[in-house]
Image: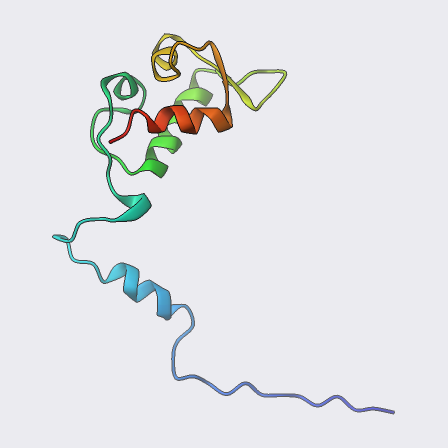
Length: 112
């Protein structure tokens, strides 16, 4: 009959989860945000939906989905499609319906 050996892990001297958090949290207020979390300027057409203050791209998409759900614009039969109202039609380049994948491409034209 074989016996199981237990292996003890030796501590590294670091608390779990601290290696990443400190680098991200170490930014000072004056440092500019970079990458995906950089606040973007919003076009007047998109501002009708998400507001006019600069927001990071993920926040814009989040607010856009809030608007879509609040106004019941997701297609009932095909949940991947968004039916545009007057405000979204401007953002979607005049299209009545776009897929959620196409939506992100169209929205990025309204961010700078």
